[in-house]
Image (tube, rainbow over all chains, first blue to last red; front, side, top):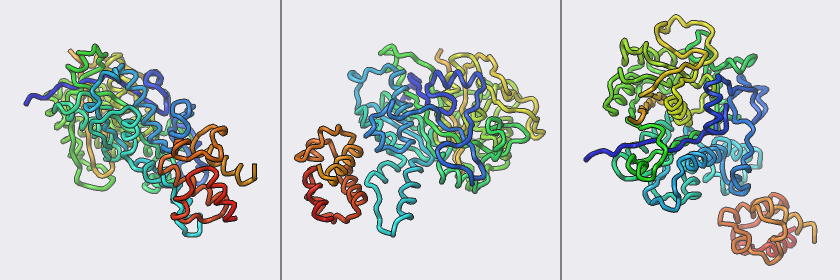
Length: 416
Length: 77
């Protein structure tokens, strides 16, 4: 059976540095940081008092008030980003066969704030369970694609993939394979997360995973810098319309890029620490290249997982050197998490969007906040430090890795 | 309008996102005000909280309109 080709025909982004895909792109190439003191709750007693929150966002500008109240923020963000992507794709919603349109979403956690608030409410009472009837349906991680399908009537496959920070790369790969196999014509994919909450910040702080650079939040996310001290928590959503190539061509759709491959692997090593030799990360990039039928020398740009943690950044770059050999130094490597912070389950989606737009514009967004060279990092690698670089990109790779040792990698190619 | 009636009305307006003018005595939560099964459970819980009363499930089933809610609460207070 011959696999169908899959292309990207729509993008939507709601990020800490821009609330639309165009704002997001402008912020990316100008090197803007999305970090600021936490406003969603009082962080006074928390070790980390800043995050990359969504800004200037009024949900009722996008979603009817009653409907918005039935959604956790992670669902609201999903709706807003997917609305933008669907509009961007110019898909004719009356003409399309909705039985062959699916929604495969990614979320690392789901409705954490809803869960937290309901449990806090219970704990403050006399032990009588007074849980809101919307508690479970608002909180479950699969409700975001459920809500999208209800709004648009898309009746194809509908679910959420959960693999922590790799979640939305997993969802894209599932979407890719579903279209490749001929099951669907179009899939709305991507991911969303809204974990800037008491439980989210407290939990990640307890793991010593997050930066505590409270005196200078905007420079806290500094992937590959010698003085990096952990990731910066972000929130938001990225939505990507994947479409079968002939279907897209037949309706004259604008095509951003082709999705040529996906790779998946597991570290099988530790709940949270990356494998020191990056064997799972090596495997996932090799899997992905093989799946795409590409050689290492074909890759021009890698948007790394690069979360700004001491161990993870070095392990990933070592793995890149191993997979790409002498070609590694020719690749424009970056980490846009230096600007957006870490959007957990939405990371793969917004970073893939960054790579797709980089390909479209011929510009690689920078890894900002680099001040001090880390001697454990090969100085020959081009980490696109501090300033965007012009680059003709034919093939771009996006890496994401999640707690639990989940690795996912996606390859995009400029359409010939 | 009684104090209870106006508080009931305010809850319904807030939870169901409907216009105040629609919340008339005979209005049915599901048929007239667009509530689904989860909305009606939420309304009953809000009434319990607001008026510090308990509405058993078998009683809650009989509260389908604005007027029935007001009468029940007036009787329970």
